[in-house]
Image 1: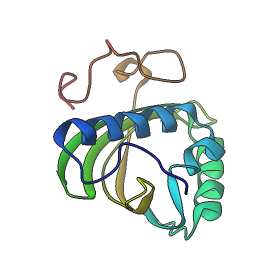
Image 2: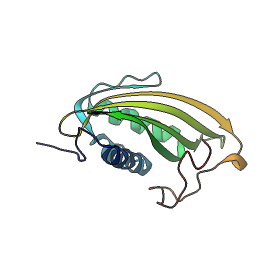
Image 3: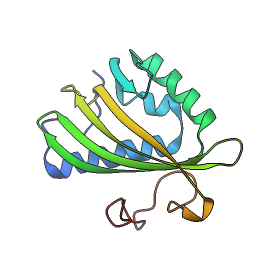
Amino acid sequence: METRPPLPPFTRETAIEKIRLAEDGWNSRDPARVALAYSLDTRWRNRVDFPRGRAEAQAMLERKWKRELDYRLIKELWAFDGNCIAVRFAYEWRDDAGQWYRSYGNENWEFGADGLMIDRHASINDMPIREAERKFFWPLGRRPDDHPGLSELGL
């Protein structure tokens, strides 16, 4: 059986660990790697996309990271209970014309007993920003442990 620790029910510490693992995965911008955190029959709501199943989620991520260049993401715990976690997040990216954006949102996650995500409901808003307004400057990939989180950045 495929498992993805930490497993529910979550404590504050394991919820924070699960969130950081998700953030690290998404910052890899590797759709195949990220998709492995989701159940084979996962259900998503992501903007106007409603992927059903791991393969559709992976395909959506492939499209996303072709469009959202220089992507850097920070996630933060909002709430948790049992097998559910709510996060808030912000990420910065630019389009192929060089316009930078900061995307803000909230996600509600539900996990199976195996630690794979069954449901992911994301609400996301994009705000154009000037390059001088950027706050996420680490090299592409995992956010360094000493980089401020959303609360420390005032986001």
